[in-house]
Structures are given as C-alpha cells and as structure tokens.
Length: 231
Image (cartoon, rainbow, N blue to C red):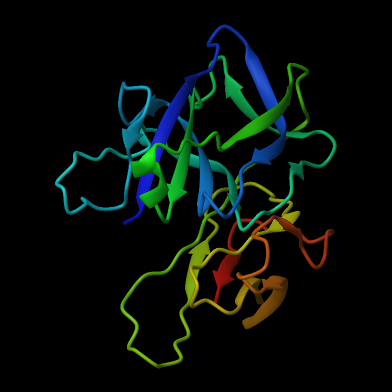
C-alpha cells in the first residue's frame, strides 16, 4: 500500500520572498517522489493529512494539497540533485502574492516499515532572497492518463495552447512516469505561415534521476499562440 502525505508552512504575509533554489533531503529508497505546492489556502488545517489521489481501502478521509490557488513550484524523484534557478529568477511567495502557504507532498510507495516504528525526515531546504527579482519563475505541468493493455506498447500525448500574452523563457525540462515509462519528449509547436513547426525542448528517460534538465536551446522563447506538446 502507498500513501500521499501533505504538510503546510505558512508564509509571512507581511513581506515578499523569492525562492531561488531547492535542495532535496530524501532518498528514493524511502520516498517515491516529493512535490512542493504553492497555495492560497491549504487543503486542510492540520499539520499532516492524507492527500492521496484516491480514497484508500481503509476509507480514510483525504484532502487535496491546496483548497484554493494550487500551483506546483518544485518536484523531486529518483535521487535527483538540487535545483538552483538562473540568476535573477525566483518564485514570489508571501506578501500579496497568490502563494500564502507552501505545502509539501511526499509519496511513500511502500509503508510497511512505518508500521513497525520507522520514521522519516524527507523534505526540501529552500534558498530564498528578499531582494526583488526581475523575472518570475513558473512551472507548466502537462500530464496524461488512461488505461494501458497488458504487454502492449502505448504512446500518449498531451498539449497546452499558450493563451496568455506573455513571453516565456523555458530553461529546464523534467519528466515523470512510474516504472513502465521509457521516454518523454517535450516540444514547442509554432504556426509558421500555415506550417506547424516542431522544436524539441527536451527528451529524457524517466527512469533516470528525475531532475530539471537544461532545455536543448536556451535562447528559445514561447509566446501567445504557441503550443507546448508532450509525447
């Protein structure tokens, strides 16, 4: 049996902070993955709660990581190393920003050892500054779902059309699947005079350490009308 557990931290609402780095303190022998959410309101008012994707067999009550204003700002799995953002880039939290709480979700794939008294201190050390930064960081999450037939090879795709009138500067690409995934690719798709032009952002085996890898072309930009596509 696996379990997802969430724990919140209230961010000081009287001032702004800019998160510029993430240092994971975890091992894939214990934690399958960790997600750090930015929330306006957490999914529960407790110190720890079950935030699994579905109800478990015991019928325990579950709540989402966030009740309002959910966004993922960091993800870790498979013993990936720390992430330091580019110079002048950070996640704005606290103050009047939409992120008033940081909620850490840890997915434990196997919990048998905890039934016999074992404990865990998985977490993330954050690097931050109070100096205002020139560029805001963000995560664009694309995912697929469905049923796979046994002993079959399946190709899945998903996409997101950019409708916001902003210029995005992608600098990193991260994959995540469970054990059956073998390759994930990300593309920018642009309408170039009626022809759909595909530009590779990144391509990785999700069984490698699931870190944020530099994209293929660091000078590339994404803007309104473009499509981000994963397959």
